[in-house]
Picture 1: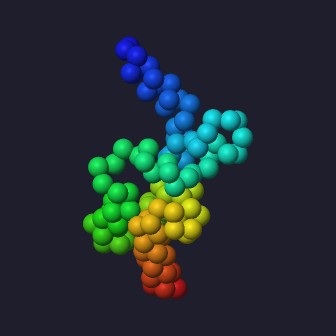
Picture 2: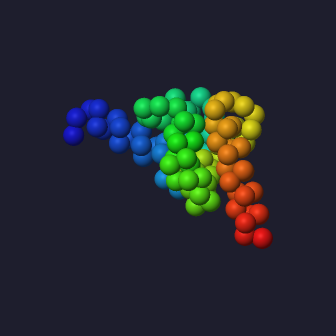
Length: 109
């Protein structure tokens, strides 16, 4: 294994949280590890903005409640940060999720 692969594996072991689907903010052994901060978005290797991805995901799935649940699950701990407007377009994703969930509740009730 070359040095780049060793670094990648070490980084992944130390920072990636499989259960949350995002990177730790720090490695300290405290609750701060699981914080999600707006600057972490730059660590996501996406070819386009994450907000655009999630809006497209919802649209291509007909804004279905199941798609909304998937996006909400994937976004996990980001919602509080998004409500503060830190990441911008992702706030629109939260608004769309709420709209879909309201419509789903209205149709179910």
